Image (cartoon, rainbow, N blue to C red; front, side):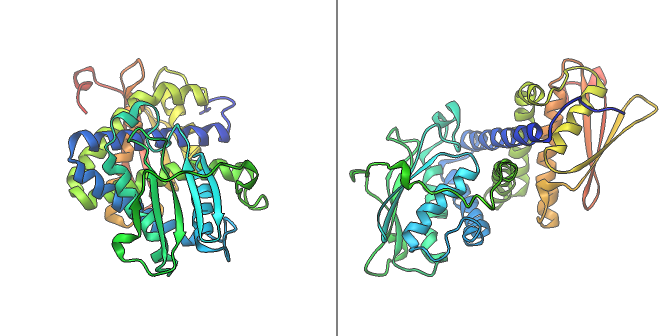
Length: 357
């Protein structure tokens, strides 16, 4: 069967990046509303410690940071790694031992009015989880981070500096807050950029998508570690379903999707999954339903089996929500049919069951 005409892989990749960003925002709001502030702190701490351990040192060479003084390397790392994900961060260097970062609004982490619903514990959690750990990972006990402004406090956005002190720091000294310190002027000519030879436009687009996907899957894993697997899956599924319902019209516009019948819904799924880099095959069934066989499953690559199952269970709800957002009542049932395969059945929904989730 044919698929959506003229949909480009680039459009589908961009649509996936935006969808997963929206899901991460929705998940944050869901947890902030349903759980305690302390839970938000512990969740963000675990999420960003996991991200730090997965990405920090392994990305130094890719970003051209090997051999730099540690304070400078850390500041440039946060500028470059966030820039790959489409996050605007400015760099200000005072000396080899002191370098600043300033995240500019709008903040990716709390895009749009979501920033009004995220407690400050989220910021504190990721600062302790990542920024306070840089010196430990670099085996430099003198390196710490000083935060002078935070995102959700009404100051001027996350801002602070990495500093290599002349003495070793105790664990509680690796992160401190100094809201009255002055920020140096920004000089655009000093802004770092990734090595051109390694970062084509296509690679940057895929990195932008992967940036958002990593926050979703690591966020779900970290949430389970804090509130338990069952509660994390409950929150993750609900946030996913709502995100899919809400964001479907945006995705459809991005890839040329049609709010039509079962065939249109299956073509929408096909086009979007190509944007994940997965292989997708559509098959028409005799009963008028469509089977969509998806293999590759980038969203759970490298995850352990129990974790894979939970992340996939939540992720499936993203697409069920998107399909349920069609004007016609259509359902999409996703079933894991192999270690690397997800089989979807897209069908007209029984009116008697259309209020069931």
